[in-house]
Length: 212
Image (cartoon, rainbow, N blue to C red; front, side, top):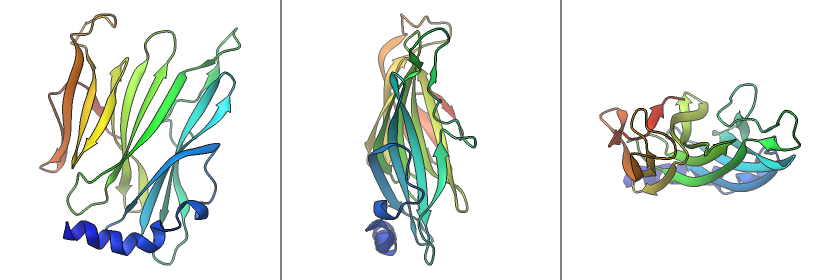
């Protein structure tokens, strides 16, 4: 608790006016932004935004960072040439519709690693002709002054997250190997995502976990 309070004090000058100082401005209209302090001073802000694209919306995640003596600047953007963490919405061949059907929600921040910056948590769903795929992303520092997705979890049809203290509750259908999409092995499966012993753990191991 003392560590968290100290980080908040150090970051206060940055967090107080984060959004008005963002450069360049996030694409489209801002839906939500969450900010967190950095252990070495300064802070980072994750912004979820969206812009109309044909019959759908294109969603974006932007990360901005600021350190003592430096202004806010963007250090990550998806989708972009540097990151396809969010699929690009494009027009389908021979149709006026755009795919995938896309939604994205920025949930908040979670302090999972001791003596480290919290992670921002986002959940996303993309669908085409079938039920699509649910994705949960943890965003934060990937290296010294580098930011982006730290961990990505995905699941057929749906995957949602709930921040509870220093861990995340994951929910969605569980499919054993070979199970058809219309018949999940467990319709409403739940798992806990934690950071223990220097790495992420998921219990039970229901949903696919990958790196950045």
